[in-house]
Length: 59
Image (cartoon, rainbow, N blue to C red):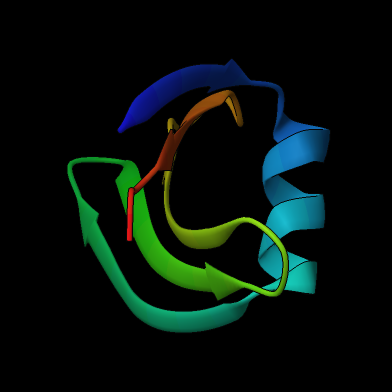
């Protein structure tokens, strides 16, 4: 598993390219679980300011 800081544009691109499996919002933080065609399983975390974290999950 890898944690990667990601700008808002990268998070949005990954969301568009991926199949979103689930979405959860709590206290302004949004967490998406997704399946990307080449990167595999991802967790995308976004803060209210648009910045975020990408988590690549090992298969």
